[in-house]
Amino acid sequence: VPPPCRPSAAPRWRWPPGDGRDADAPAACGGPALNVAAKRKASPRQTITSALPGADALRRVLERWLLRRGHPESRPIELTHRRIYVLPSGSGLVFAAALLVMLIASINYSLSLGYGLVFVLAGAGLASIFHAYRNLLGIRIRPGRCEPVFAGEAATFCIVLDNSRATRLPALGLRLREASARFELKAGETRVVELTCASTRRGRLDAGRSVLETCWPLGLVRAWSVFIPALSCTVYPA
Image 1: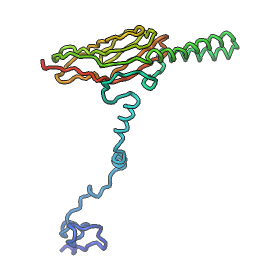
Image 2 (image 1 turned 90 degrees about the vertical axis):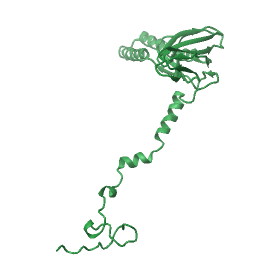
Image 3 (image 1 turned 60 degrees about the vertical axis):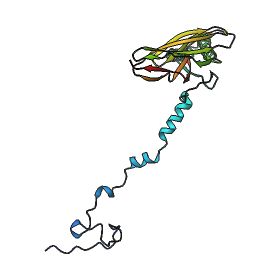
Image 4 (image 1 turned 30 degrees about the horizontal axis):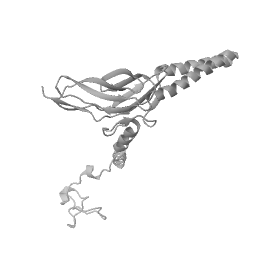
């Protein structure tokens, strides 16, 4: 005959509440079998994940602030200094590395002409940053019209660009989805740029995030601006 079960001296909790039975006792004594998985504590990874519920929201806020990925803008978009970004291109990085090698060689061999050449080329590179920035400054962007199409046909998005300055703006590029176009704006010109994209599904096809960029004048730096025009195309079923 098995020995009688003895309840624990200090039961941690009871099931059900108030019935007087020990939850730690085995099932043979009338107490329910304790689920071991229920006693396990949450893993540190789960605890950290649950403690950071706003990580995705923070990432979306940063993307919206850095890349202007927010709601579509229906009003005219004017490119100011807060919307233009400038970074060196691949050619610019190679150019900077070459200048560094030339500077080290000039220091090693005490070449006065080498110093002069390095400083002249470096000044030209720094001046190209200012010119690339000025090539986008002040451009006004407005969403145009987009005619409805059937699924499988090419959708044409129209972007209107205004140059209110008295100078020509050369070597501009506009990218929208998988389409791109190269053009220039004359002084005081208003140009309609058409970009053609494929439509594979019926419904509403939004223009999405678009980029206006330039590498003028030397191609050493790339200046660009990101915007989301309030422009969409209606795609009918084929």
